[in-house]
Length: 446
Ligand SMILES: *Cc1c(COP(=O)(O)O)cnc(C)c1O
Image (cartoon, rainbow, N blue to C red):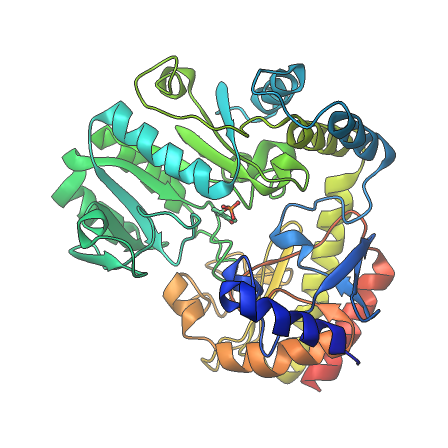
């Protein structure tokens, strides 16, 4: 595969952009593939190579790269009428009403410009509303590039996970292991009165697609209720994908106080949002005393793209299609690894999938979890399946990144950059794409 133009572009990029990219995860070794354009479920790179794309913009592209006519028309119209105004537009109200109608926990919503901005604002809102400072987060959870959550260590010794974050900020964050009810109980017993909120992804979507064990979110809900803390679901990646229009909170039957959105809700344009109970969300300025503002917030082009995407999904078989292909992929992958690498774990749900190169020698995935690890206690390998971010981190990340991913790219399958980020099936993918993909996996493992 000739990738000379990508290499030359990266050479230029390295001189003018730190690491040659505008988002860290794109700096794939030895150099990224520069994309020229999308085509349905495929991308074509600057050297003319074609790939089946499972990156899908890291999540926003539910419909794939070719937008259906009504979606494309609405975007073109909004852009041609003048990009933005600094005054409200009707489409913001339309999209807010759509989300409020479909996500039961959301009575009011504020749109912002990225998932990061959504989680930053949600944390500020929770602190302002409760008058408390501490935030509980999951180790291996991801909430964007923000000060309050770029924290590692344990509950008693939190430290910044990046330089540039004051240690004093990290001290207000309490990291706990995902799926560990006992650890959550302990931090509430010690710090409950100081905890403004628990901020949690319903499914760890940026650390190998780790599903919650049965009852985990219910326990977080109970602890928050008992101590007067808020439960914030970060649905930036799961929102309008897992559980369809009700989002992952519908699937798990747990009602958060606040939800952060991003990715799909902007239909491929920069977006974030904070939704929840009106009584809480109304603490945002100008209704309330928690300052929040943005020049581009509720951008008409983004709002049109998000609204038309979601309306299209509501009116067509989008979720049935992507979920059925996701299931077929995961089932096929379970068969592939059962034969060649039974210790590896096929993870994912709905239209998310990944093979995590777990190390422990374990039985192959069982009947119960045949379409991706579902944390089923009756599965033969329940004890060994990844339950925390740490479990995924201990898997064979080097083999995944240096051998497996380049092999797949060479076969025309574009996967996310590393073992941690999830992969997405879109409405544009077909059964033939899935079969071709499974053949490529088979070729790597055999
Ligand atoms: C992508 C993501 C974010 C950050 O969103 P950006 O738009 O990249 O700032 C936050 N939380 C989760 C769960 C995400 O997947």
